[in-house]
Length: 241
Image (cartoon, rainbow, N blue to C red; front, side, top):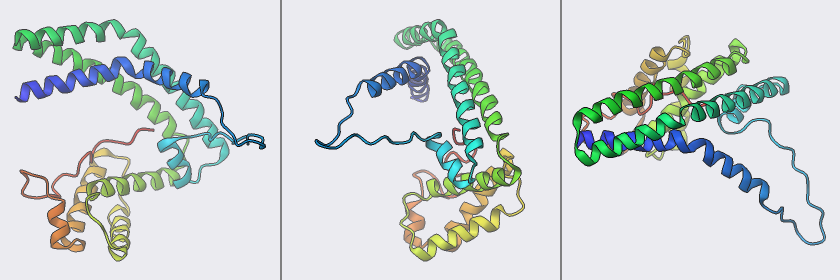
């Protein structure tokens, strides 16, 4: 069952690897081909297109990025997308072959072939991750030290919110959580993955023990786990930028 689950996960990841750029292209084409609707008798208003979207837009808000910084990040993001598209193009044949190999291994229940496919799949993911890390570093280099600190603390807060998303915090609890976050992140180099992970774990434990009620604490407990705060979900996974 464990092998089958891992195999299915790999297939989904491969589909994502091979289809992501095509899906993005189709989305762009659909968006540009849509007629612009406007009320009769009124001229359509021209909306200024935002320089950044998603997490980049959040970064601009949290870190109070200048227009120049936003333009730099937008340009880097465009180059990053081109690099990822090139990766998908250059590895399209390998991805296609691997998908076929996985299908045959599953059909024949060939554990050896499955293992070989897993090794090949990990190699693809590592190479893709290297591209992401390279461009993320360039984007982060645009920020000042103060802005980086603000962003790192905001990322910790997002992880905490994700960890306790099932809990309906009261206004007072929300204030207490924010105060605890400020306390636990003070003086910590959150750009370091290990330090960030340890901070999130300690902060999660504190919130669970000192801020949540018994009912709220029970709501955060995952099945099969004695403690809900031992390791927050995605604590060591950085947000995409």
